[in-house]
Image 1 (cartoon, helix red, strand yellow):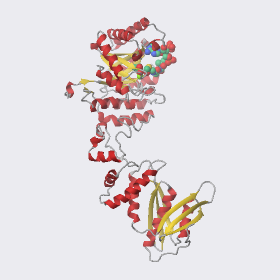
Image 2 (image 1 turned 45 degrees about the vertical axis):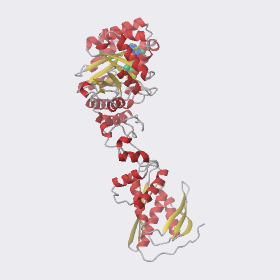
Image 3 (image 1 turned 135 degrees about the vertical axis):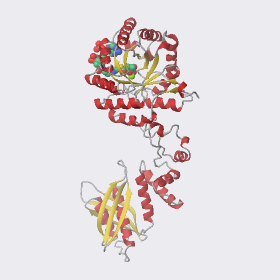
Image 4 (image 1 turned 180 degrees about the horizontal axis):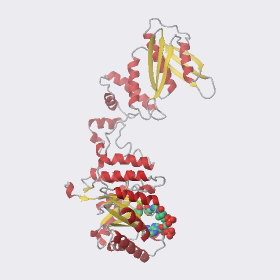
Length: 520
Ligand SMILES: CC(=O)SCCNC(=O)CCNC(=O)[C@H](O)C(C)(C)COP(=O)(O)OP(=O)(O)OC[C@H]1O[C@@H](n2cnc3c(N)ncnc32)[C@H](O)[C@@H]1OP(=O)(O)O
Ligand SMILES: CC(C)C(=O)C(=O)O
Ligand SMILES: [Mg+2]
């Protein structure tokens, strides 16, 4: 493999604050833009496109302040092909230690029709505007909007004009995400080969993701000679978005054997900025998004978890730490196996779980996982409590429970308990479904037990969370507590109440009479 210092440098041009912000609904506040710009600067982005200064007073002020505060990144602003835009852009970016004017115009037949310009008239406009920009600064980027749908001859002609007028970066955007990897590479290669002066400038690629090929198209362009990738955090941007920064950067890092290019991005900062951009833009990152998705380093299925526990390289091609993630995760769910459960129990401090107990908890875990999307740590702890509590005494067992509740009183509970091996059934009413359930239990197993405490807590997240119910009963100075977890709060309440009753029986010598003996 080539030494890093000898590898071709690919510049990372981030346009989260310009193209990214153009996504409907992604508008960021002034302070949020400053914060994101600072994070981009810190992570080593070469060029930050901070905004479109002519667009609004707010955009102008944001670009200006980002320029003032910039440390190492070049600060760039966008402008159309007219002097007014370019002047306004320069006013905003000139405060940066390193700044760039980015000017563009749509060169394809469809886009030439927007300002209604002939090929020649547009060529003249490009010459004049790039020259104007170059008179203001020596760092000028020119973009041929919709380049991938522009006639090749015309594209060569206007690229040459822009170079001769002083552009230092030539950007070849796939504005509507229309190209494909081979074509993307061929276009850049063709321009570099054919346009006089092409070797004097940096060719840049700016891809959109309408067909899901933005990352592939950008990397193909780099392979053909482009040395700047325009991208955004989380792929934010117009319509289906832009090339995602984290994807191209990590692709070149992970597959450096076949893409021997270097960037100066501190990849450990990827996760933090991804989360922040998601928060400030209000655009959630899809769970299975490459590199930064919630599931990108998570494995739920048993075979994968087993593999991961034996060697993480079996199912992961990059280290989570390399993108700033503490560790991979092995969330437990219905597809998980014993290996992951054992590992989880260990992690939770259950070091001495024997094979039989593991078997028992695994059966309960699978049953729970069938009812829940994800089984959380607290679910496992709750299961372990049930497993160890079960061994104590189970005179009373819950066999069946159905409650009727809602706005119309009275609420009722139809319960079937197995008491000392015999089934008993009773229906009771009460002030709410839990009260009705407790009344039904009391009717079947009458004791003098007093309810001292009833507490519900949602131990896991979501509407399918497990509720943990704690019940404390007292009788003749003796106290017993029961705790149970279930996705159904009333079921958890019944089980907790019964556990407490069972424990109370262990603590007293006499056993009460059972009032109802026949299950219906
Ligand atoms: C592919 C891209 O991402 S391009 C960037 C897109 N981003 C944006 O448009 C966001 C910021 N835009 C804005 O705030 C506004 O559109 C402004 C301030 C730039 C212009 O606003 P308005 O003057 O009201 O014009 P409007 O938006 O209605 O139309 C765009 C005008 O710019 C012209 N235009 C579009 N692109 C260019 C260009 N590259 N160079 C010169 N003129 C252009 C259009 O022909 C049209 O001109 P017309 O009004 O003479 O018909
Ligand atoms: C302004 C240009 C570079 C653009 O965003 C595009 O063509 O997609
Ligand atoms: Mg764009």
